[in-house]
Image (tube, rainbow, N blue to C red; front, top):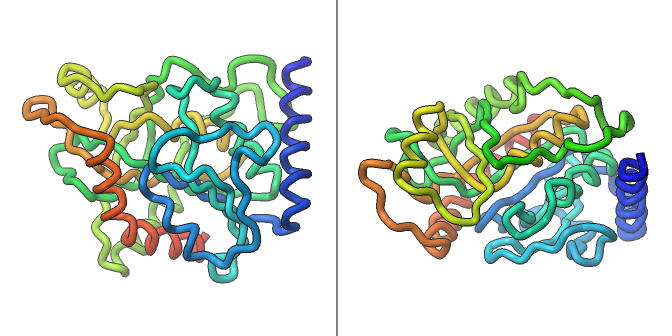
Length: 276
């Protein structure tokens, strides 16, 4: 019980700090992954707060993640954008990794757009493709809901039959067609990292139904669903991971591809926010 009380108190403290900077109550929250942080610079900003200034927020230490919370407007919608995230492989607990999602929900956001850079394992996917997620497989070996449950944050056993909202998947496809942005649909596999996978691991992940793989998003999604948020997941294929033709990949190349794809992703996310 002490842990749940502590979590609620930490959330309240973080929210109170943010409220001192702006009274904006976001309708939609967005988490920007590796190399995808430019979107926040194109919104009508009201406040930008570094993660390390917000009480109990974990600090991002990975290249391509600015580590700041931006609150403002995109069109008529009030929006909170996490420019970057932290990862399990950085040594944080799952509860720490997902703490910002708890805070975004407490600020008022009921809808969440998650983005990330990912390895593409489907032979029909190419570098630079945007994949609209329809489901995921959690292979991180952990879960952010382990431990005492606080019913104010969500139910003990949340239903995960629709981790990515089906109506919003259709909306993303419709917008992509109108904007002439090629998108694919796929199943996301979340792994702990930080190493990239071996050829045998890619082969296994494909066999169990995975289309893209990355080291983030799954825990954030679980906590969002726990809090009754509706979620959209968008993964940018930054490296092709075909087990039978595997080539070395680097974080530098992953960031390069993500940044090249960012204008298309930004247009898609802006339209999604307007339609949500």
